[in-house]
Image (tube, rainbow, N blue to C red):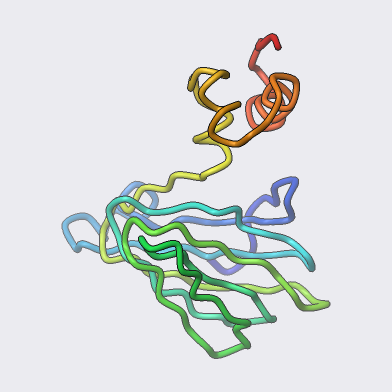
Length: 158
């Protein structure tokens, strides 16, 4: 957790600390993550089905928030030293809005919080194209384009 992990194409890197990577956490009911953001980088909308997360900004400025079950957004810009909580099972996100890299340390109340990224879950899965077309008001070609973006191995046809 001393240094950033490998950055994704979105400019985001994370290093999980859980019983798999640090066996001393086994049966402790907690895990951690270091997340690094290049300027403008995002952690795409996602949720943790088995944990609430508290994120502490140790460097930079992040726009962070979550969406509750009534589709109300709770978001703000967090500065170094500030924290935000992301309730279990609610979609949340972060984006570096500063001109320098940003880092957060996240803590979970579960040794196995799980993580489900919304774009990959929707477009990288086997959900029928016609359902997605109706749900999002997109054409068949647009659905295929989204599938290719989130699942490059997909062999989908319009």
